[in-house]
Image (cartoon, rainbow, N blue to C red):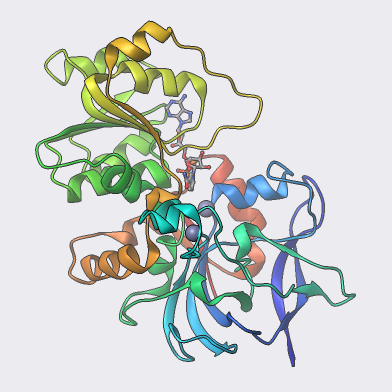
Length: 361
Ligand SMILES: NC(=O)c1ccc[n+]([C@@H]2O[C@H](COP(=O)([O-])OP(=O)(O)OC[C@H]3O[C@@H](n4cnc5c(N)ncnc54)[C@H](O)[C@@H]3O)[C@@H](O)[C@H]2O)c1
Ligand SMILES: [Zn+2]
Ligand SMILES: [Zn+2]
């Protein structure tokens, strides 16, 4: 059997997205059909629409989602129909060399659904990050579904599926921020703000938020930043050093994805400190640093894939913190919108007006 549902499709490079009817197959072995309840609009969706990821148009956009499992295929035991789940884009395989070495958050062979969703004329769709959740229903690998407490709001829970998890994980999992640490976060959009929140959860003593937009700095402060620096007005490296006894921060999280902000992060950390790159650069970007500084400043230069998260470990834990009032996921939801308003949401995102617009179905 198949299901015909409404969904947001990007048909060609730079063209506005359109609301279309798509065909979603029933789940085969290892797959799950999910009735989507909410899906956040992430920068990566816009990136797909602009052809910045690859040329496999048409794309089925949307990947920060929560919903309810409607049906599962043969052999699926971890989730069942009726489960409230957050979708993840790194369903670990359990067998690759990273998984075998006990580091599944690095899994090199993550899973997606095997069957394709299509347009009504049979054209295959490419789901963004293997999810495609700006749709009433979507088909994913069962491992992409992580069951969490139904008491959470779908709009807030879905955000853990991408940007918010990436930011929290960049601080907690990749940066290993600990009690008493000083942290600087460069770029305070949804991801950077989540890194602020993660640093706060981990007990950081000082959290310095850096951005070029005062509106973003204000939000970062509300979410737990103890200090803010507008890097258009003052040199962020000097400002961060001034705020950390002249030394630099223990952990600096780069959440923009540009060479100049990476260089700021590199020089704004203390000796033997850690730089975490969670912002995603584009292919033409190059970084030049004196090799002697790389050696002489010591410490760790790390990248954070999806916050080095393990969905089955991190999603239920973070949802519990949310339900206990210790993690304010609602603060990331600037507005809720309908499925046909994604194009407008891209516009608002482009102008820096929102942390997250969330499609609620
Ligand atoms: N590593 C991952 O797994 C992962 C997951 C999701 C998103 N990301 C990436 O994280 C980055 C941030 O995503 P987002 O959703 O928060 O985007 P966003 O556009 O909401 O936020 C970017 C922020 O950076 C600020 N900024 C821009 N240029 C700056 C500069 N020169 N100095 C300081 N601040 C500057 C902007 O004002 C904005 O507040 C993107 O590159 C995105 O692709 C990575
Ligand atoms: Zn995303
Ligand atoms: Zn693996």
